[in-house]
Length: 450
Image (cartoon, rainbow, N blue to C red; front, side, top):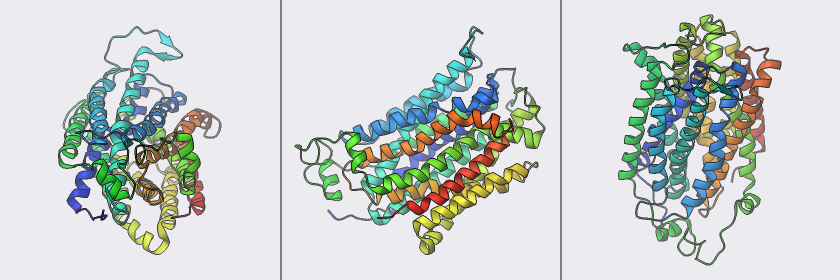
């Protein structure tokens, strides 16, 4: 079967639902620390709440990859998982920001009050559902796009991802601007955050439905022909007789690119975990003279809104840098573009140490956006070009563990680093993030493109 080119519209439709999924992910990234701090979490505990999202991703994504590789039905191959994930996500997005409103007994278990436990389980289900909905988009590009267009397809996905991030990040300050309350009683999440989650949930389901109705996945015969496989791919191995490999066998047979890009991913995603966890406290202290105690204080909640703004600036920086990446790739190859982007992002992180004006932070987060643009596009382009069509989804699911595992490690070490390395200063954790990106850039030299 000829590996035909897809039109821009087809490539766009393939990833448009990612826009809505990314709004949900952006709301989670920008507001989880704010929500749990409002519910009563200590700054040294914050990183532990961030263990659940990557942990669930590490469990869910390989399973979605494995089982969707073998799912062929009227709804498609990846689509059933996309719809189920989206439906669960919108339900949880309504519940999570209301954790402080429900009447709970005030007794604590393992140092967490009942509201925090409710929020923790809601976060677990939210991230599980986001992972279920997000993974099919990456897989469908691998399934349906030829090698020549994969860079373009992932660039479109990256652009939609950043556009969704901008919306999700800006929602709290937008709703505050139109008059919705940005402060609430101690232990209660402000209405500006709640409405951000409600509107994000509505957009999510509409975007997912758009992709569902505009994209037709290949049937087994078409897929086998497209990827040069024998028999009907995905039903019972290649031809119905080959035994399905387990994940250990797939890891053993994985190309070296899987592991070397995974090492770079380790440093990158640990860095961004610290950005998501500690930006709120760092900005509140550095720029708004927060006392570090009262999360109901206007300084803390205003900084929470500003986190959305600078994360939005980071997304804009990522969009702009995505236009620079093709030029860098032309002159420095994918590897060179990857390393340069990470070093630019590292400069952004480290510069926050000296910034006390919230508007100057825009420069820092614009630079951070360069690293994010590269992280969204280049690893998947390099990896999928080294893979055969068989077990594509399973490999991409396993590869997403290189996104999840570093976040788990970073979350486990966050409180220790904050206490002993940064002396309690949350801005110090952003400097640590910059150092991690430098290590990631150095690790790029190990990647061999195929």
